[in-house]
Image (cartoon, rainbow, N blue to C red):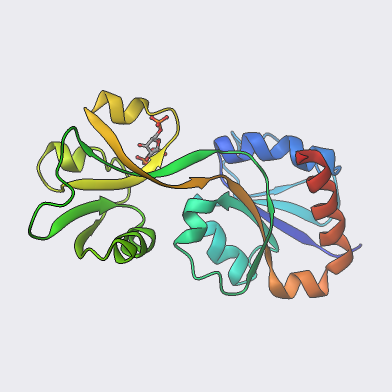
Length: 210
Ligand code: PRP
């Protein structure tokens, strides 16, 4: 048997959009990865497996070598140190924006400490550091849009895709922070040890996305 390869993915959009790219390099799961309760799924290629993990855990799986390769959003990667991983390819999928948002007419420059609710404390801290503004960051794990509505935060930093969630909650974009898309990440040691296999995969996927 050749070298093994473990690829960390997340159920949902990332899995759906990544499967055709993997198929383009000849990797096809042997069962429906979306519906299975298994966390490790074999593929048609002996030794190549998909690992199904939470999006925010993909960088850790790749950093610590649980997976050789992973696919996750740039939003998740911006919260990670980047230690132990390469980010060789923008897959051009899962496109959205990271934005600063708040209630219509909110005063971002009001005196006193603004409170910002977010799943992305690192990005938020850097963003406000660049503005030279001190803020209090409230770390949440989802549904950030609620925080300004209940008066818990002045602002949120969150991803926006269609804008429907902001609109439905009477919030508006105050400033876009950066564009987001899903990236292929690779464990640095795997890149050395499994160079040929991983390069073949990166080259094949690069062709499939361009
Ligand atoms: C994300 C994000 C927004 C929403 C944006 O939430 O946090 O709430 O999608 O999409 P839209 O602009 O198309 O409305 P997700 O559904 O991933 O759940 P979460 O709140 O648990 O992060």
